[in-house]
Image (cartoon, rainbow, N blue to C red):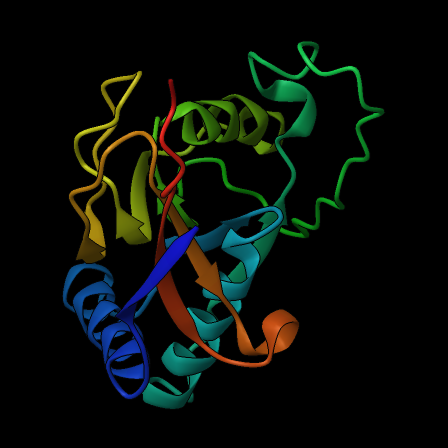
Length: 184
């Protein structure tokens, strides 16, 4: 396996700040908008976005929740392993709100589709927008496109994009992992 850093610091932090400014341009004071991070990895980005927005808009009450989509995925029964769900924490109503769904990497779109299904248990939003740190734009299985993008990455199916977070891996960076094994 061969790795290459495609987003490291300080660009990692700058990218998150840029996404926050784009959200403020679109959602103004967030009075009708909420943030929902998709478990497990989208929650790290959602928390960073939330912290940055609170610093930029200190007097605003910006709602943040986490949503687990494990049992809403269309492929959850295809694995022999026992699935362990993450927690869902949404302590507000999303009925008629603008929901900003947040995930770290948009690949096939299947996690986002599952998130849309799972989110309906908390109400019917007036609008749903998607914010992703990394958009792998040529790999969709579903017609889902992000509204806010940190970085677009053109990669092939045999490559993986991995977002590393300070909270879990000790540093913030995005790496592209290439499989160097030759298949016969």
